[in-house]
Image 1 (cartoon, rainbow, N blue to C red):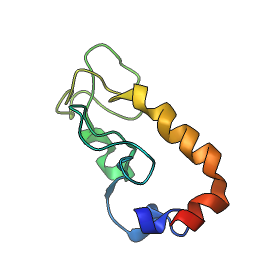
Image 2: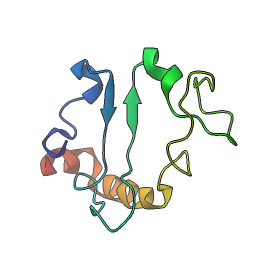
Image 3: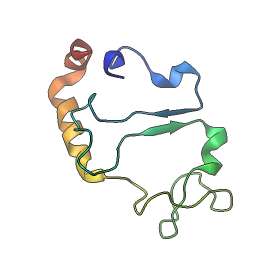
Image 4: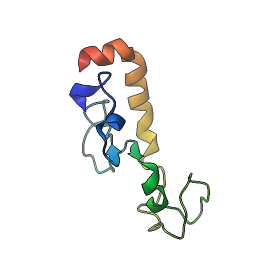
Length: 101
């Protein structure tokens, strides 16, 4: 992903699933005991099979009947690390991100 930021769109590649991990590309250190974090893009035909959560009922198009249930304690991952990536992206701007790529 590092060499592609601002130059292409992973959704155009034709894959059914894309996981954009935030480490390296957007200033998140790898390791440290925490889970990876980043958006996962899934085509519509796979949405019924996405993880659900027993407490939070509104997770988009996820039907609990077809879902395998939760895959971790939190349906949102390690959200506390997202401000680091957000700040990096805002500080770099679109031109800076392209230049860094």
